[in-house]
Image 1 (cartoon, rainbow, N blue to C red):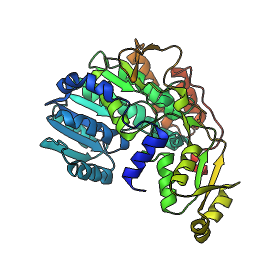
Image 2 (cartoon, rainbow, N blue to C red):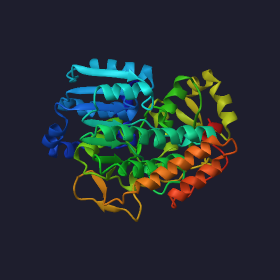
Image 3 (cartoon, helix red, strand yellow):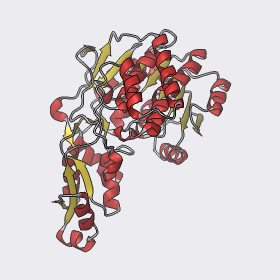
Image 4 (cartoon, rainbow, N blue to C red):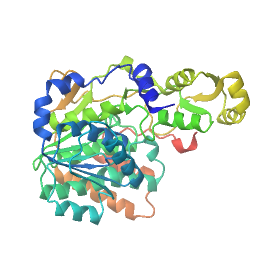
Length: 406
């Protein structure tokens, strides 16, 4: 399926919107957005990913002075540049450069200090998937990226304070039930603890439809490789398009006030299930799903390529979610958070957020570092440390990760 068709499929069947839900807010605030971006120096960390690259495409029309993109994925950086330079009418500043490097590395710090900072900094580098939670090693990598390294970046920014700082959060940070969601909820506290030095903003938003590493993107890979589709049938999620993901981050970064959290105004009826997306995708390709009772049966049927093409059936295995950290629905805010729903047409804003004490944040990081040094530390020990900092973290533990499934 071509990318054009995928965008059309997303618009028709997933987001069910012909155009971005944020176009009116962008148009109403175009002058202010331009004033915030034009001739500014911008650093985008994790900029080669789905959301980061969409953010870049959202800010470029406002003609920044420079764009520096940092990402550990060298191949994705290469494709990002080819994509931008192959797009008719796309403005790219003369000072455009990509760096395949870790933002927590010494060479990043050297580059940052040489440039004496940036006026706008946006951080999209994060472990974003629930499947990142497996054992103590995967959890340490997740927490280092989402919390510990994020704070290291903030310490450097404090020496060269930007005019705007944005770090992406997730809808899973509201009443978190998995370590990834808890880490991003704590990340919000960490960045807000620096809000007396420079303005910080963030956004919680839905799944990005067919983004890199997402289950729907996996459907396309399975079909390309003639493999069965597997999906949970009881998990409901909100979805935004790739374009919308960059726009909500751009709007949050440029129009948000200090210590605000943005989220899209989506209604519960707009939630989708993954099995519904898979079924519709197959039907659009001319297949009918062949419902299997196990992953093994699905794999066997998938191996019968002649039968699949002759009968136009496609094997699927839809099951009830049985892995750690999965809620059956998503939410953007908690009952204790204050909401401004009037400022924007398609965006809600969490305001008057309590700022965590820096010492409390430092103590959490010390506890995590000490725990990671101990050979006897296990997953439940880290969960307890996180719960001490975040009492409403109700971890769902089922003893099984997504890596045990198709």
